[in-house]
Image 1 (spheres, rainbow, N blue to C red):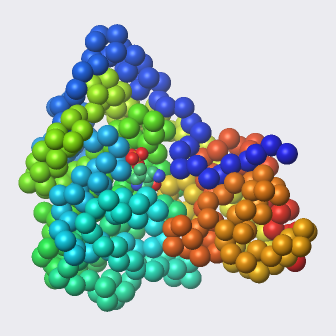
Image 2: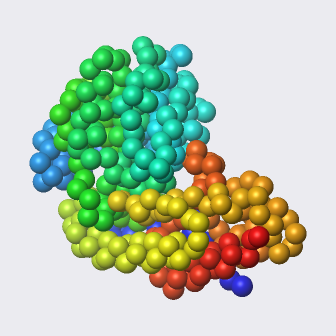
Length: 367
Ligand code: PMP
């Protein structure tokens, strides 16, 4: 039985032709030196232009290019967090945040959201954890792993809270912002509220299947960008010129790459939804964006496998799927969603169809 892997955070798509061509041209032209730490003027302008087209006015000085979104987050954690500061993260959330925090000063504070409430983030739940030590509220929109999109109204309600906490910044990780399936999407940058404390991090890894290029960016108050540029310049320098050129070509010809990918993702989302609907006792949220489902498989915990083993934990269940059915998914416990698993639908369609049949078969063998 061949392995079917739904665990990766990277899609199977190829990077845009425009990116590859621009990188090769730039390398041949000798652009293999340090790029400016803040990003090239052309790329910063193009990113500002991208937001302008969405109705959000950004000064290119508010944009900083980073070697990936992860690094943008790490820059911000380093600059913003002081001893004892708290970083508030609604969960389920991407486990990368917790890993980054191991190397930063902040202390993680989670706010549980649930499938029953469609992963809404209650203002009261937030108020219960916010205090004078709260320094960063970190949202992911669309979310990984749930695919939940916060509406403009939800974001503006959350932003209103910031008025009561003058030291608190909102960091909105919008790395999946172009992977959406019909629900209106608003960047935190386009919302009413204290924008001097709003920072968006974004990148090319997900929207444009460019995870290996290591390029991302952030947009926020000029003062924070300046500090971040200084930090990045001291620790990393700038993203290589030919990679910045590739990113520029991608963003200026964005729809050529995006439209075909989104068509496939839309169809794959339907296939995975139908596959999950065909399995009894599985509950899930239909993702508004990103490319994962995060189904609750807890009904299948505490069951016996054909080999007589018990699926006591989510880990046992994932091991059973992997070892007995060669189907790889991510244990949802890592995201703060006990009994759930994360499954990517950014995989080849025939594999996806097979994976859904295999999942059903595997779960129905549990008694
Ligand atoms: N943020 C989120 C929510 C992600 O899912 C990921 C990748 N899994 C990243 C950031 C990392 O992005 P990059 O490759 O740009 O560092």
